[in-house]
View 1: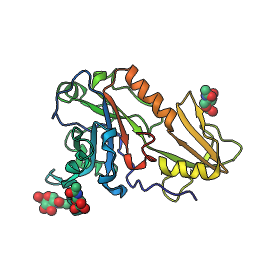
View 2: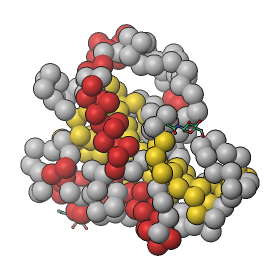
View 3: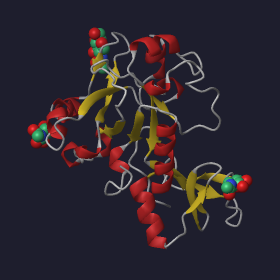
Length: 265
Ligand SMILES: *[C@@H]1O[C@H](CO)[C@@H](O)[C@H](O)[C@H]1NC(C)=O
Ligand SMILES: *[C@@H]1O[C@H](CO)[C@@H](O)[C@H](O)[C@H]1NC(C)=O
Ligand SMILES: *[C@@H]1O[C@H](CO)[C@@H](O)[C@H](O)[C@H]1NC(C)=O
């Protein structure tokens, strides 16, 4: 069995694709968002964040009370979140911090009773009018049903999310190991998700070859019957270049504790 990532929540169901950013700063055309999520459940101390690498840091997650719809934090998060901004500003006084609401463990039904969202029915017109940007999850899916920009959101309000993790699958047949090869299930004790750091440690310890597929813009490697798909440095570079070419507002990493010595950041 491979080491499993400490990433407890499977981030963000369809309805949480968008993390609404507060209208706290006026977007300037020259702004390039370099965002990252810090997740309290990662065990990664906020004081260890190299905040000089980011323009925006998301503190994750606040939850929504299912009867009063008020935001709340667990007691331990409350303590950690209260000085998050002070802590990360020590290394980068100009970094902006945002509170992230929801996450994979959030109760979908609570959130869906407020705007009644499902994928494809986001209020794009209102988002375009009132929001500075939307973080768009461009991973954890098989085929996109529609695209945000063709749906009416300006490209300079789209921030591309980057996964700092991958998935380890158990192949049905070790010899059949291309993209889309049959698998029998996850290759870790949990859901198969592994942090970039754990993937790198694992791959290096076996001296395995990391391959790149330009059709799917993804890295992958095979070790025995374990098959791991993930974004390595070259994929992150290509995605960031793509975001610039499409004149998006920037990128966001989920989640920064999964990085290996800030290589991807
Ligand atoms: C949710 O709100 C209700 C009503 O204000 C309150 O009684 C309850 O304790 C809250 N639950 C949590 C988990 O905060
Ligand atoms: C922030 O709060 C945590 C938890 O209470 C504490 O361990 C840490 O020292 C505080 N950091 C700063 C910079 O005040
Ligand atoms: C990527 O993988 C798919 C599936 O195996 C394959 O059909 C395609 O040719 C590969 N692309 C490149 C550029 O190698």
